[in-house]
Image (tube, rainbow over all chains, first blue to last red; front, side, top):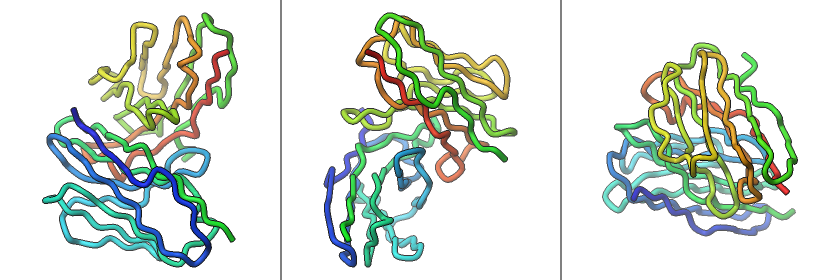
Length: 111
Length: 115
């Protein structure tokens, strides 16, 4: 059975801290891995990763994929209260177009 | 573009009642997805359509759930009869082409509570 597992499930930090969110997967026909941010409504796209070892970066957020060990990490540096959200990891299956989502990591950034 | 439009945004219904959720995908998108999100199970794909044809409904939990897409601009997800365990947020999403990941757009969700 295809599955995506995120850890930790929840995290509380203070502004300025750096956080690392983890996503591991076991799927057939991997096409890509995606990160989304969800703030009480629809998930919004952050990154899509298809190749190992190539870091994707957007401001204070960055992500990298390891296709050998089947995991990805999402880093957020100098966290701000606006980073508080649920961060979702999903794997796209190449032969179906399906997205398999992890449980999400709930991040709370305190002032 | 107005994005993916879902209705109703919130619904509270009694157990046993029929619930119909509606979705208008982004114009020009040929894939439509229905997801369900709960605290226990996270985001789960229920069913998806390509060019109005259901492609994979393996995520539909049971016969009480059905989905239709009569045309390119409208889809429904129906639950009959509803049960308290169906309480969840139901997201509709649409996409274009074969690469879904960074081109999938989610609606705001329909928050369903069955009491």
